[in-house]
Length: 604
Image (cartoon, rainbow, N blue to C red):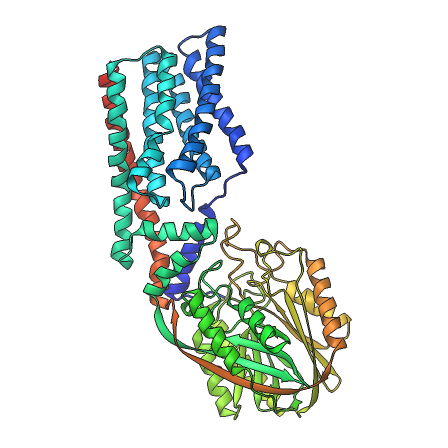
């Protein structure tokens, strides 16, 4: 389902930039790449001046010396200069050097080609221009990502390239005043170039959110690289707004609590372990520990504008829910499960006494976040029919093609009315509930499975058995829902629906275009369905008569990120990237021309 509101558009733009991130290879593999680059640079640097077998040997020795210098200096920079920096351990420091040598070797290679036509002096000039490019690159990257003081950033930027260029000068057998003059000019020019590039990017954030863009980038990197959520959440707390939120609770009791379904009016985002991303599994675990029963937390109707700002807000919500979940169930009757579909939308409803449990899906089309208008509409319909408590779930169980927003909303409202009326027309009977939970060890966050695993609640009314399957993931690949329901039918389950929690714990941990794997994209379908089948059989085997109670818990003054702040934050990413594209060529091409003019003056 497509939402045409500005927030959805902004979120889509932000997600598209995620695929530009990358992860470094293992340290040993980087050293192998570094050896290739250093030796290649050494050979090219000498053979162009001394085209002989002895020149080849000298080039290999120079390359080996460059490699040893890099390894030693990377250790020194990591252990002494950048010590304590959460981003730059030895592996990432080596990764920075590896990228620098890719730049430098490019200039060396171009220099070799130019030297064939215009003489070796041009090769030396281009090699030194590559040295300057490395200085600018290191200083810019470290400024944008490191938390160290500027003096240490300067040391980390210059400590690796300068000893390397000195070795080139020795190999050239050319050490004179003009080259040392350039070794003073190039670092000064790199400082100016880096500032001219980063300052406008910071201004984008200061104008948009009154926060420097690079401060936000560093906070994001701390989370992405080392899982620290507090720095980014500090910004979200500052930008957020206070709202009242609800959590709907359906509790089944026998002699003791049997099962709880909790549906927060909170979106479990924005990504990874930031804000309310882990709320579904956290709330599930807290309810289970408190009541010693099985709990599940399917997705509510609200979107990213109701992401909580921090872990402290999660704890506030959970504490209120735990304090309120001690109520006892009184209702002993329920209607059979009802499902209504009109070809676009599907609604499911089951009445427990005077309480309604309703879910919506657009499967097999994309079922993403629904507009708040749907929640208001269901509320009005429930009050019209005298329903005292209602719980509404977004099944969030298919991701495929998109549909027109207005047509989808009309269809959702239509099936809501028909499904409610049909459920209310049915006779209520005594019912039984069974429940089971399984946590597949082979499915991880990277595969799209959260720590809440798979929870199955089986409700038996008369001869009808209904299975509610809740998977702790962010949506499902299209068609998987239908496969699961077909399997459940083969083992005696008459009706059912498949839900995901929309947990964003799985988001921003794998480098794919979407930023995460929906359930079934990276997980083997047959293995998943077998786990669900086993859990359903286990749930059906412990069916017992229960009483049910429903309650809405309202939590006041909870800090959410808010639609305006989240939209602005997402747009900041796009604006900063566009600004960077506009200024990167003018800044660095101008710097390169100035450096080349200076080189021509020095090496005439």
